[in-house]
Image (cartoon, rainbow, N blue to C red; front, side, top):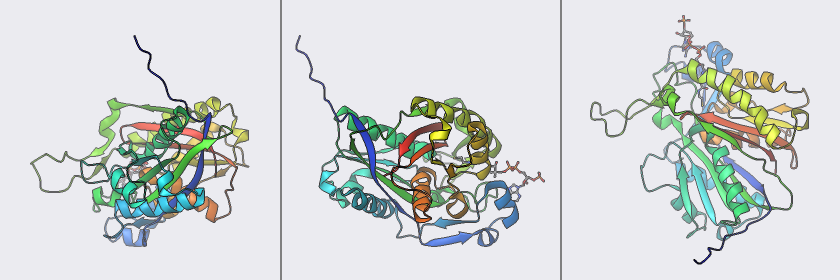
Length: 330
Ligand SMILES: CC(C)(COP(=O)(O)OP(=O)(O)OC[C@H]1O[C@@H](n2cnc3c(N)ncnc32)[C@H](O)[C@@H]1OP(=O)(O)O)[C@@H](O)C(=O)NCCC(=O)NCCS
């Protein structure tokens, strides 16, 4: 029997550059309260959100992705022709197929590279990063572009006072390539299909009972409990697998879903005071797969994050799915 040859990749992988795109339109809590019966005080106290960005018609999934990716490529010093895999994490590309990733690859000059979408909701960026790390180390790719992008407002019922104020739009991107040293820690990830119904679409696309677009349905307290207990406990495993303790961290950059979930994770981790914690939720709301790279961008802009620093990132959301790892910032 003939023996199949296996591929060999780089020993380690790293993030070479990060980019982001924030939609132009800012919607503050005062404007939000013209759509739902609520108050700035209630929204800030329950979630930490003061304002969010909503995409206009021209700020499509492709447009926002290409813009974020170009910034990441420029920072990484990588041309489109050098990208040999494009992964797009999104749940708001409204065409069932084809995936949006091949069109994004075409616009970026990465025509011909394998390109595909993944549906892992708010865990999407960390899942994509885990795939990119594995692809680079296996030799299947040398430079992988990972994009997290959402237009959650397309699937949000803006008159539903239990969800309308939470969700927002945006894109983030990262170029992952070979490294001499380990700069992406082992992923810790998982899913719980038994809890699929606590965060989902109100109907399927082929449900004839209504002409309305399906929107997000959420049992807020069930999601809150899972994130602040189950996922919070998993964050310690993310550090253990990277061989680090919480004292080794410079930054903690969790998915931006709710300030109180972030607080619960910090308590579980017994977060030391020197660790900078991302609170981008205040200005961006919950942008699902885009929230972690967007939060990294804000930390750079505010001078709170520097190249070479060590960060724990963790995404969690519909599925239910979670994923997280330790990274070294580019
Ligand atoms: C959505 C969320 C903020 C709601 O907060 P909550 O404390 O669970 O709120 P509840 O639904 O229990 O409602 C509590 C009270 O606030 C009221 N309320 C609900 N929505 C409101 C709003 N938008 N404005 C003002 N009051 C509101 C309710 O009517 C209720 O009033 P009552 O006590 O008089 O009956 C919270 O559950 C949450 O953040 N969950 C996690 C969601 C999440 O992060 N999802 C994404 C994960 S990727």
